Image (cartoon, rainbow, N blue to C red; front, side, top):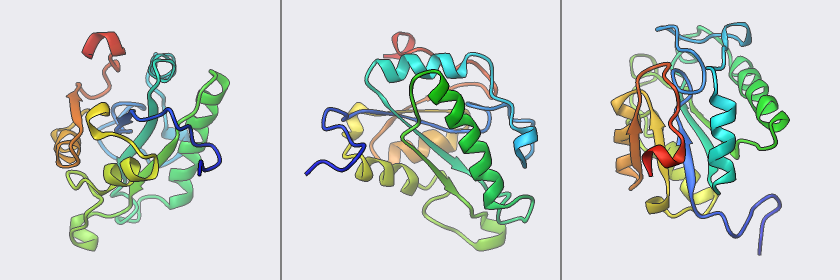
Length: 169
């Protein structure tokens, strides 16, 4: 049986790292909505991916939570703000997964990239075919996490433009 909001046609997804891919990464932590600056053309580019049939899923390490630099409410506020921009443009992000751990503060975990648990959760939750999915990230750990889940990856420079589907497929 189909779950509410789930399309039986969606079998592919674009996973995206957040800091440095969706929003400007200042080189340290983005701690608040006031610091959250969406990079130019991100919303327009993600609309193209969405219109090409890709479910959009954000997977982001948020080790600043473990360090006490900000609260989960701050992460949710940033994600809600970005989701609002996407909805205004006529699409939405299917899910935002974040890892609140940092190995120096909580020990090792399976969700912090290069761990693949966030990607695996997305694959399972949305019944996705890993071979039809892709991740775009700005760190090798993003691609390592994807590879462990059987997903291909594209590495871009931090704060660079997200490529369009026709540029990488």
